[in-house]
Amino acid sequence: MNNLKKIGLTALAGSLVSLGSATAGEMSVSGSINTTLKFGKGGGNTSRTLGTDRDVAFSGSGELDNGTSFSMKTVMDDAYAVSSSTTTITTPTLGSFTLGTSTGSASYMYDEEVPQAYEQVSDVVTNGANVVGNFMDSNHVMYTAPALEMMGATIQAHLGYSPQASDGGAGDGGQATFSETYGSGAEAGLTITYDALKIGVYGAERDNVVPNVAGTDATSDEFNGVWYAKYSFGPVSIGYSESYVDAGLTGTAESTTTAKGERTAAGLFEGDQMSIAFNVNDNLSISYTAAEDTYDSQDDAATAVTTDDDVTEEIDAIQIAYSMGGMSIKAYNMEVTNPGHDEDAADQSVTEIALGFAF
Image (cartoon, rainbow, N blue to C red; front, side, top):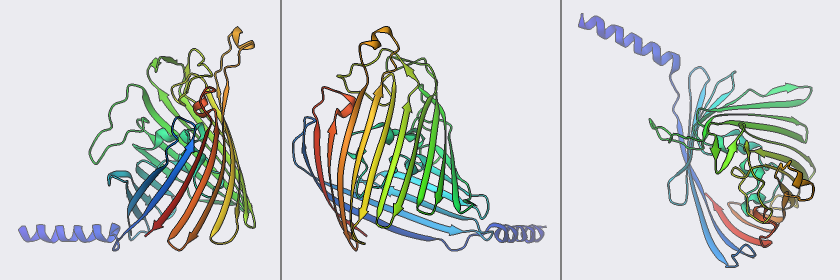
């Protein structure tokens, strides 16, 4: 009887291996280190600062006999704590599924998606475009559909879901801290690429589940959206993007002379960015970006006829980047008017110079 059990178990094990065994996987380590000199005026800080940024990424991949592949990537931050960790399963015909925490959301493929030589303009001040959909960062699954070819264009779709879209993740077997503010979240994005033209549109929504958030009433679910268009001709690339953030809050319109948060202020945040980049050669590139982000108080009271509660934050950025093998030198200067959507805030002029090495 024992021999029969052994024979049966051996046959079962052999069947399982033949159905779903994986080929030898691969593991790699990469990283980068950047040293920055940052200085400027305005915003209450005029000091010159030397900073260091270190990133180490561990990547692994493998493949099953049926053609399904899997990959993982874990990135460590300056303190060598996990800043993001994702697992992706890619099927031969049904697309791919990504699960994880931080930077795995589809929003990172759509927000501020205009050509830049170095950094997004939100590196200096937070704007509406930068926060679009970022509540889907953690505790989520994203589906990427197979690319569809139609009349010379390539169409790619992304769908995401989070059971609790509070941007709170958890480790293996753990649970995210319960949120009394937010419920589930969902996202959807679509890109269309035709020759040198690429167009993308993205939207994300999450439930507001409490009647009071930061002193204002939650009247509807939160919705964020963005769309962009980019076109390249020779060494030149141009781009345009518009963003929209509605936290679903209502209340007294905030003063134009106070700083406002994109998810705590009653009202809407609507922005646009225009950019042009020029690749001088294989090593050198430059870019210019003009961005505006307007706080719309949505004040429909009679006083709104004579009082304008809207305020626009403006950013102009000039950037340059030079690379030579694994070394790069990059810099930007950004001029900010009404930072934080506050008309009383001092204008800012910020310059950053970075020396980076990749390994």
